[in-house]
Length: 326
Length: 206
Image (cartoon, rainbow over all chains, first blue to last red; front, top):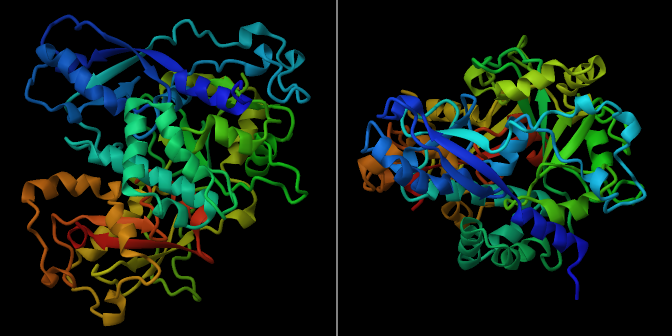
């Protein structure tokens, strides 16, 4: 039996990687010239701290302070510390400035009738951002001067990272069911296996556990876990303007039902139009902004519940990045 | 979106002051230069749309500032005042910091026995099974201090000690990341008009 479109899309998402070129922070490097970079293809769904032991081993001979521990490592892009509890693909989509791949242009899509991307709306190819410089994504690893204001410290045995993930899973599950019953009934073994699946990037192991969370007996899906990442130039008063940064990202989270009051299925477009009406004035067509998941523009006509099954990150959330049209 | 507290006292509110706005715990994340430059060159209509999006939808979605209720779990010390207002643009970290400050205050916290009861709606396993990352900043210190601190019941009603962590849970279900936006949590997980934050002191839980 061929895989369903949803599971095919999920497989594709899990297989998706980004090439990274990671250098040691020059201020921590004992050689006058920069050390060699560490190169790796890393899954979009995975978490950067999993790389720290390898990075630490790779750069240990170049470190001015050889006694620093691997878990004291943190990564930055253009001097912005990267949140270790965000999956890599989300960080890239938020921060790299790269143009998302235009899904609709390639496949007229899962929902053919809603051809979302209209060439006429974007007639000038110059508006397409130049991606040639974006990959590999060039990051810097640091093992000292932890940015306390911005990142929670990690610990040697990985408990902090684990707890952050599991709590996010719980938040997603609580959002889906409106009660804590399902996630609380997850056995210790299942919970451990879920985390192992993320560490080893094992989709089939992940699905065995995740399917229990997604299809709890006798419970009906109440809300789809979604977080929307909205870029903004207007820095609200009270926000510190960090040096080297002109804009900021606002995370918007709301309870989104799988169905509209009319009983029509909730689409990405209806949800975004409801939550961010000025940015998504149309439910069908992206007029001012695109919705991006895993580096690809998602058609606004896509049914949100399907997206939740196919394109959710390992923590259960659809982390939707809003990319403004240039 | 950011709100100032021009009237810190709402006559009907049981709270006697809001949790102060702290620019260090504002929720928005800074954007790197490359991505910011793109934003600066947006067409005017896109710029305008983003400015308005800062208000986060319809006014009925969020009442500003939002109300939170701080509820002790198990033997965590209770606060005399439990209901507070906080700006929705703050990170959850602001709540944790505020709570730590309150619990560490010089005056011993209320020892109202009913307040010290375990929260009936929270199965103990919830809290014990989900140690919070929110307390991670002080975790390392815990480790250095060893596991022995505060094991006895004597610590329960006393003020928070320097090395003790506070574990915060939304509705006693999950511990939000310190960088989550208070307004988002309130919008999604409030009970009535209050976001209920249960808190435990680390040594109370294995």
